[in-house]
Image (cartoon, rainbow, N blue to C red):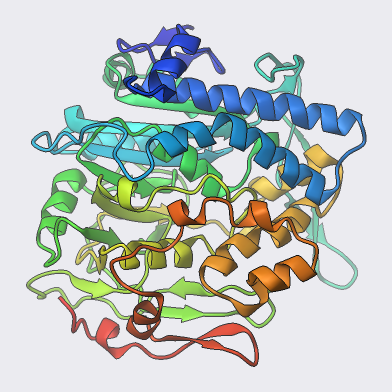
Length: 490
């Protein structure tokens, strides 16, 4: 069924073009032009079409070396994303609806079978569903692509693959895994908009915005979240979270009240690792429990490309008068005023990156003057997924598309240097990268726009977060952070 919202946003069928796409793109990018969400979606769609066709041509020509693949990504991004990014550098794309108290929910979903359930939960449990807007990036296996632009698919039979499923044990007692043929993935947007009249109204009136991406062309969570951030349309608050969540009753109003209770509001960020649930998405209200603080960081010794990771520390007792500060932002959940998108814009130049996103986001936000807080109460629950479930991973699709079993590792090994360079790892210095023959001009592109802020310094952040760069190991050492665990900073 065809579904276009009242403000011209195409929702169904998949890969529907924005009406008057060329005109809307021109209005959004030209000097003196007026931006629109439809224009931005058209820009992203055009970028994906060009990237798809150039990737397909590279495969036909036998060009699948990591540096060639990266060069192609940056060539397409420079032509189709960079002009838009440069126009709005340092300023908001849309006026923020100050008095509306609306919430934009950013959902980057990779082959997600719980996307519709998550969206239903969010609207059903919201105190003000009429003020809730969703930007969903749906990265699915929709079927076999049969046209040059990637817009037409054959969904018959089983054209897709499962993730690596555990099917038994070998003689040594280790798990045996395999990929199996599978039907196309469930489209959570179609299910949300068409299967229940209660929710269709939100699709028709423009509260749902969507960008479709073939799973075979997923570029990892950092780029998917960049896409999702561009679906924001002026809402008061920005919330980024995973797409397999449950929500507490009135979660929207409670997060707004919680962030207003912070001492640095409006330049405050709420973030945490939410508690987990297992099994199916039963329609039940999340039990509100005391929140926990992100106080801890570590570098794993066996990580092939070590970069610092963050983790939880102590929890609230339940009688604290206001939220207390933490040094880290979790990419899987944070809530802030929408000015955050201007001060800490999402970086389009992190394709295939997985680890390192959170420490970069934390440093960029804090040095831009934003304080980070742990919410005192858990208002969402997250489905944590053990690997043995066999759910698809984006790196599997990357490897399958390029016909190289470790292709994602090869390109990620290069691009993680962008994050490490920003965090000032010695092994990601300009000189070191040049000596290794890496494409330095791409790795550090527009770092002034997507790097650290200017209100506080790198050294001040490392002292604040109890981190220290170890020159011998060239890794970040983390020490116990008592002020965070004890909630000593308001």
